[in-house]
Length: 148
Image (cartoon, rainbow, N blue to C red):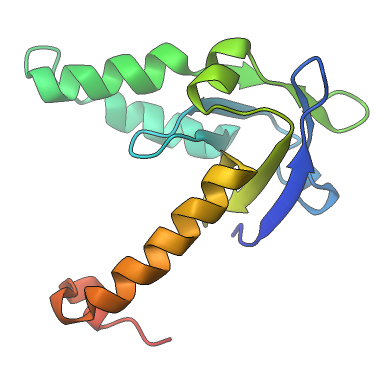
């Protein structure tokens, strides 16, 4: 299970050093693609990606919404291997999509990670906190059962 937000930097070549505590879990390989609902990169351990890929394969190529999701997630997906220094090279297409420059946030999301531009991450967190406080009376069944 992946959790926590870690500040990381991209180098001038677009390489990202995976935080040390996650390297062993990601040694099998990882797949990077766009964050579908936010301007970030989603990073999956290879085993998690293979499960997602199975689910995506069941989506229709006729239903436009399903075709769009497949086109975006699979179209941007790239398998990344860590080098001996624990770095991965992020393609410019993903860096441009997520508006990544140098300062970034590597954020655990249970079975995957999100990689955000640091300023955009801070803005999103501020918005999430404000919205959550205002929407506390509109909780889904799942959230109303969550014991925090």
